Amino acid sequence: MAIDSGKGHHHGLALDTDGKTPRPRRVSSGEPELLRLIRDVVSLVYGPQVNGPST
Image (tube, rainbow, N blue to C red; front, side, top):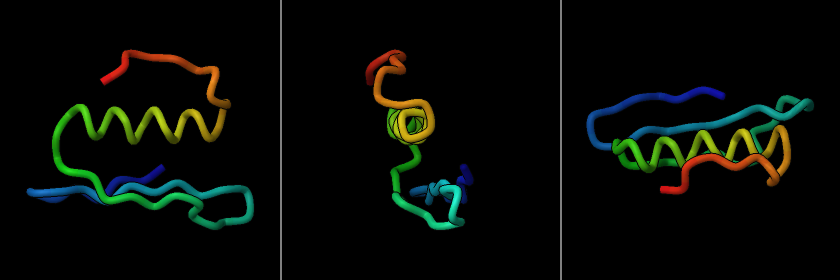
């Protein structure tokens, strides 16, 4: 997972095993949005059964 940080928004992406980016995303620079992005990436890796705090 990589995040390109900016003042107003961030770009996040993750690479799959083929080196492709299945879900690049632009998110606003707030904690709830960043946590949602991280949760979605973890869900891609470990499956949707991984739960954390909902935002």
